[in-house]
Length: 183
Image (tube, rainbow, N blue to C red; front, side, top):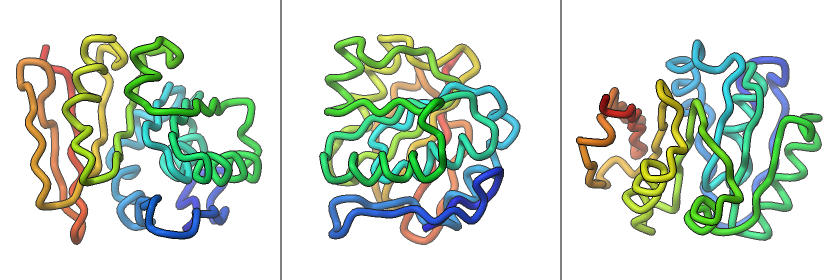
């Protein structure tokens, strides 16, 4: 796993051993960032369920202003911090420990964000609760975008009065759903 483009292009990233953390594949990450590249310069980003931090670090590499990484797993957070340090991005990265739902509700994570990456454990049924909190807490900026990664066959209900599917793409068994606010 590596940073695909930008100032940290080619930087290798570590990942925890085992199956608890599922990093986004390089080719999927490259496709995502190709489609959102013009949103990145100066963007404030939330990398919820950050894992290794690959998504947020890729964004920083490509010109994002700052990234808040939220990760519950202690082992994943340790690797995440090592990856941030290897990239030299400690000044533009904030790591928040704990459950993203609780951290959003508590106000420990402060928005709004121009871009939010959502990649919860596929079987955890967390998409709807997180989207609900994002909406009610006004965590997404006016013209912001949510990029949600899920299993291709997964279905998550969407309150289309709040969020609309802007675009959806599949890469093998992975589905990427781009969400915008319904105005």
